Image (cartoon, rainbow, N blue to C red; front, top):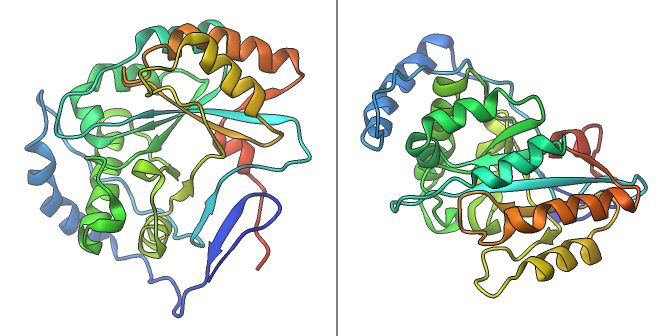
Amino acid sequence: MIRACRIGVLTISLAAAIPCVCSAGQDELRGEHLKPGILRYATAPLTLRIPPPAAPLKPQVFFHGDRSLKRVALTFDACATQAPSGYDDGLIRVLVETRTPATLFLGGKWMLDHPDETRRLAGVDLFELGNHSFLHPHLIRIPEDRVRQELEWTQIVLYSLTGRQATLFRPPYGEYDERSLRIAAELGITTVQFDLASGDPDPGATKNRLVHSVAAGVRNGSIVVMHMNGRGRHTAEALPAIIDELRRKGVSLVTAGDLIRGSRGDD
């Protein structure tokens, strides 16, 4: 059912073809139905816009890119649950000042809590913005319609704030199943995991420990996960040394989308 391959892709085979994209009228009707639920979480006035439907994809999940190329993607999660979540401005400043491309996986509620920051992030040419669900639930424990809602609500919020649509999705807690892969693919979104966790949410993770964890653990094609919502206590402090060390080793830092582009699994 699920099979690993040399470039870190897992692919699932469906018994039936991916459903056809709904008509524009049906999409608009469904979008209008979704708006009231989203706006319950808005902390400031926001006009919601429904993004145009994206072409469905083959369901698959990437853990890393091509191991033969000296390229690495730094990714940062902005998780948001019912509780307020922060914004690590120092981390973003490091990325901008060092001209480091990065993929930022943003939660839907996180964006509603931080609309101005979301717009600013969208204006930085170094950043790729991804979908990190709406309320950061355990997707494997919730009904299918709720899984779809988590992704759709986040797509609507991102599009409403920035005019962008996410093409990448990172499941909360690194948990996924065939349903979440299929639903993401039906929405035109590729699921991206990671092969190196920095460990930055750990209260015991010091600056030096984070630098060593990433520098020692990284491989060609690695996708590194860190956090930008304030839960990585020393991430911004460690990030300059992480970037310096990777570049010293001759690693090219790219977005996750660039890292996996052109990669394909063994069918």
